Length: 253
Image (cartoon, rainbow, N blue to C red; front, side, top):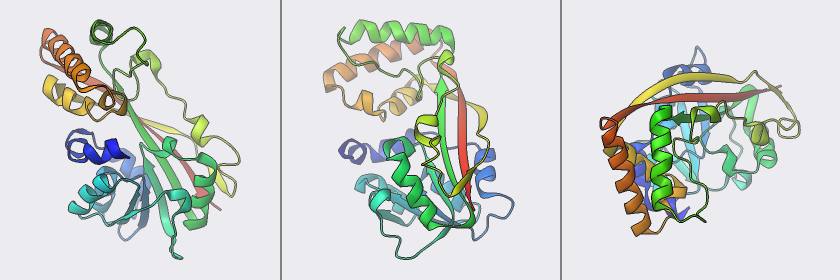
């Protein structure tokens, strides 16, 4: 959590929000006064989108820095691991988790969700993944190779994926176990395509919030970002990133 504490403002500034269609699908036709527990809420990016539609949202996260930013945006946030969090008897129409369920134990977390979701309520897990145009991805891969030592861990070049061929992502390892959804009926997974344009500086700012990049030694990270920036400049200084947001959900019987 220390890395996220240190980068909270940058994370909130640079990370993308979620497509309106995703939020609409999660909340349904009547979103006003719907009670939502947003697990792994971070700086409240998804929480704010749901709150703006009238939902009553409580955030839950383990990072004090990220939660402080969420509170600044008006998202009441509690600090605790979801698996051991004390709900104090509260129940919710939705338990949501954006870009974070893979950090938790999928079995105990799903059982915890089932214990705080009202009958007919839903558990909604969603992730966004995005890739550069293929020619830029090739050039960026070469930039990484020029800077990083040969024995460096594999780095992800894009947003959760490195290339277009990495999609679609398979989240069954964290969502598909029957034990994870005991007491729940799984709904068909859905994907929502979208795109976003990044300048070189916007992308480098966003990339600095990826834990594999943030954990690099400062001098190596700066050299890498210089190479990435120069590569993007050679492609016109900006690019369109192709995204998909994947939604996995289940309804409590």
